[in-house]
Length: 142
Ligand SMILES: [Zn+2]
Image 1 (cartoon, rainbow, N blue to C red):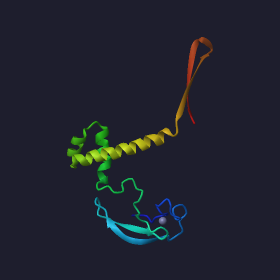
Image 2: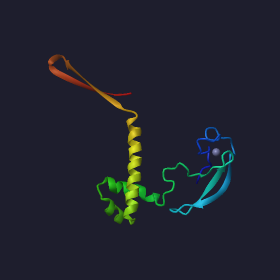
Image 3: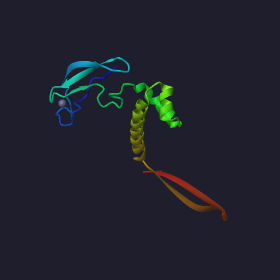
Image 4: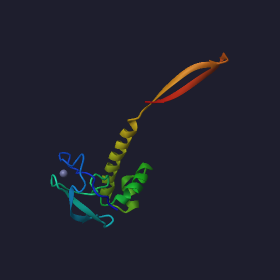
C-alpha cells in the first residue's frame, strides 16, 4: 500500500535530488489513527533524517481524512460549520480546522488554475452588407 521513498525529504541532504538505490534504512513504523495501518518509517543514510512513506502527503498527520470530502461538499453547499459537524458526527473544532485546511487546498488549486490564463478578444465585422453585423469572439490560451 505504501510506496518506498525515492529521495530524502531533507533539502540540504546529498540524497535529496538524486538518491541512489538503498539510500535509507528501515526505522520502525507507526500506526495511523484513522485506519489503524502500520506505516513504515525510514532513516536516510546520508543525513540521518527520519521520515515515513506518507511524508509530503496532503493528508499526512490527519486523524480523520475520510471526512474531508463529505465536509467539503457540505460546506460548499451552504451548510454551516456547526451543522456540518453535527451531520458528520465530529467536533465543531474539527470542522473548523478542516475548513481552514480545505480553504488552503482550494486556494492552492485556484492559483494553479490561474497559472494558465485565457485571453478574450472580440471583432466586429459584417456579412454581405453592413446591415448584417457580425460579432466574432475569440478565447486565446497563452
Ligand atoms: Zn538525507
